[in-house]
Image (cartoon, rainbow, N blue to C red; front, side, top):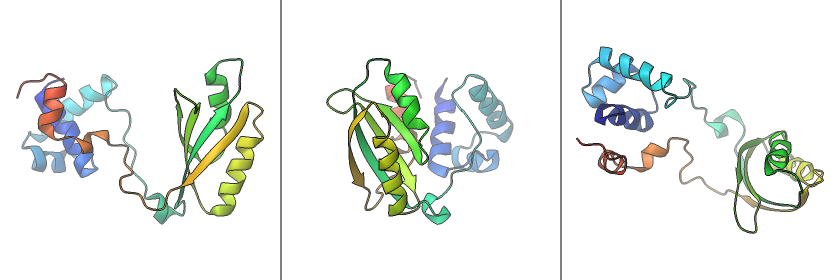
Length: 162
């Protein structure tokens, strides 16, 4: 990966699109080069998909809940995690260190669905207890981590020369 690849990935994160024409406008990299580099980044596994982002609130899943899950299990954490992932509405799951075993993020339609989610967690034998937090307002909700960096910082952190 070089400086042009980082510029492309940063532009994709900032613009929310992989359109070669829009990326060309933002980076001045020729469209043919953009196609070539995007294909290489896909082949290398750096770019995972071509999915469109969905505004979950506009779609009807406007209630976001962050749940800490404390579990008691003798097997692997993957087994418990897979049980939690089977619960509808769970969009993110993190195995963590410390008192909390898992952090779950769920996007739901309404408070009735929150009650169902917590009931489903509590019905999981390994779950000892949960601590739920309703999100009042999203300050940033993005899967585009590169948005939170400047291009210069990314190049510096990755050890890539301009």
